[in-house]
Image 1 (tube, rainbow, N blue to C red):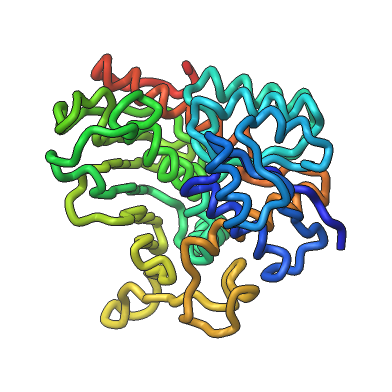
Image 2: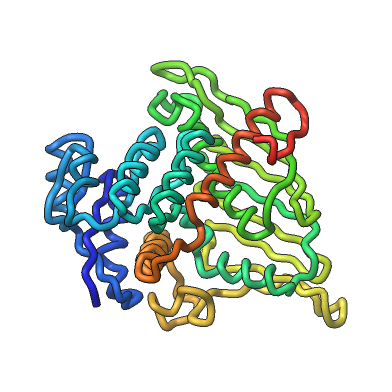
Length: 367
């Protein structure tokens, strides 16, 4: 075992998740590299000290530059708002340090391209945090599709729907200001990433993006509430995607359906330990979707629990990410999803915005 000093920029929602993951990953997956929680950065000295004590870091700071420059910080995790991703990543790469960056990769496509260029120039390991696709169920779905278990894919439907802003009386806040914080910047990247991972590249699309509640107590809304998109995958399949933060009743509606010539798959993150599989075989009277409960036979499940059907949770997805990142550093080779994969998501988002404005189909390659 070899210790590796971890610096995490951001101590809030995702900063805590990554801190817990780095503290647990060595025991769960018995990784050769064992994280040492070296430094955490927050927006003030007081909050940095709070997070340092709460999460078990050696030191805290309110300046991300101090964290990136510190020689005892050997790998950097970025868990800040998107507007800071580019500067932090570029600085870390200039110092030869591997970087894990929360999604979306950059605040816009230009940021993402610059971050990919910096990663390539440095030769450092890089990874983007799309955690939901790492559930054992979705990893198994990827295996089924890739193996041809459901035949040739003809159609994909995906959604990422939540209801945290469904009530029009919910006051305006940071999420309702700036395009990077809208639904296309916040929720859409996860399901676009899922579509690319499960089905493959998207060639062209047409999208509608809109604000449902333009005014809220305390101010105007300057970004989007929901969006829909039709697309054509490079492999020929048709696709439909929907993203919403005003989808009343939906708490974690990361869900997809995949239809193939020999079967079909259904998944819903609100029941993340189950995958529904249909195989077009046998007598018609006996056909139907089968509910598969995840267990040790599925990817990345057994290190958490030996009992089938016992299940994994949200934090476990982040631990799986930490394992992938550490193994990539140990091997000296980036592992999916890389910064380039994150840029592909931003490229589709840019094409969707252009399509919505023009009310016309757009080729993703043009962006």
